[in-house]
Image 1 (tube, rainbow, N blue to C red):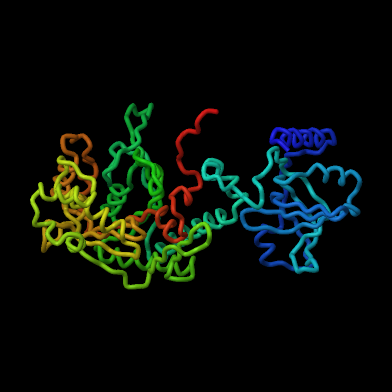
Image 2 (cartoon, rainbow, N blue to C red):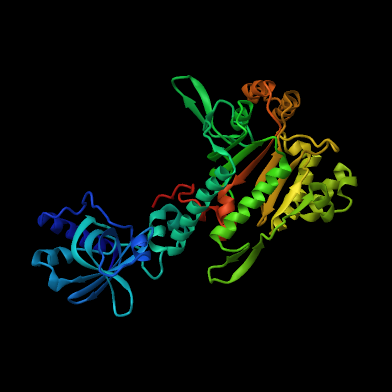
Length: 483
């Protein structure tokens, strides 16, 4: 049957419901249990009131079996048409897959042991005017899955479980930090000067103040103001916005955890992150070995989180790729990049060429967790210089699954050095200097450790998702072409 014919039939049923004075878009319906809770604690003979979407219908004449589902699970319904009044039987004939239904009845087990509710009364709560995706094929079109996530959630149990897992992970992160004395705070999402990272911001305008504002690229500089104000352990689970490219690892709007711990350093923060991620894996996966599977269910990658995690200095990792890299001239480095197929151009600084080598030949090839420490000072303007080697800063970058998952710093708290670092970063755009942050530092900020964790990427690691769009409920997409 053509789609237009199916739509016409459903709309005709809608008309017939109205003609019978049946409200096809009902109101309040008090439930005794969510479907998943009822199924998990199923008790024969219990009287219940449940509501959900009809996701299956097996017509056996006078005996009708339906599946009622919500995000928590599925439960079978049994309807005996012989027990319904003629009016209710007519209304039942106007029900379709996808409709929302409220039912009242008793729990029982079928001969095959299937938990079931024997329906005594029912109420249509919302008429579905469009057919759902085919039960057996689900939503396989990636474009539909991302643009119409609600269909993906209805049709694909794996997607529902992935997002429920993400919700649990975020909840556990909060609990982990709160159990260790960290206080959750909120900082501005619109900022006069976007800081805390090097990225292109989204720009907006505030009419009442008559000023340009920017969606934040990071909350770092505001969280450090709280250290100045006397907070010793703070964190924020926040939305950041960067007006840059979209890829399987980048979305312009993403979730980030940032946490700061007064009197700590980058090594303490690395220990904290290692403990956090391992606790998430053990709680959510049940193992420190995370198996990534393909569409056929075959294991194609395993990430081993067994502790302790490896730590290595940035320079040492680059030397493993090319022993003589740091002895080469600038011209020789450019030639070597070309030889290795690494993107480069003559305008790049030497530290940028080194970073290209690191990203392509170290980071992208690292699967098990690795803390890369002591990065060049030019790469991290907000971190404290190492006292023994001023060319590097006391930081780590946690690499896992071929990408950066978390940076951590011993935070720079010298206002004079911080001003010069930000000036070097800003170049001729001095107006981008956050003078209020520098003023705060001049009032004194305690030494501290800080971390950031990309929540979307972390969920990708823990669930085996291959695209960031798979772990974001509503990812940003290019506009759909006009028909």
